[in-house]
Amino acid sequence: MNIVFNPSAAQGVNCRAVNQKYLKTAEESYRRFGKVNFDWYNSILDDAVIWRDIPKRDAIDTMQAVKKYVSQEGMKAYNYVLNRIKQV
Image (cartoon, rainbow, N blue to C red; front, side, top):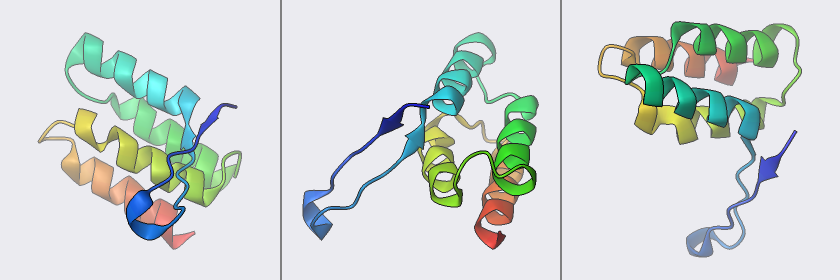
């Protein structure tokens, strides 16, 4: 698993851990279909909530990084998955 750290100068050091596997998959889906694929949401939700293969903070950071690829129609699913991950 690759982790990207982006320190934020405004708040001292604020590290974001974005899961590269999920980021690349979302980018590829956006290039091919113009939106994030529904299976992507299921996969990150399963890995973060059910299997706990990725840490909660990483999943949230990844969701926030992927938001720019979410279509208008996909925002309801995006918000649902993000809220479910935050509830864990």
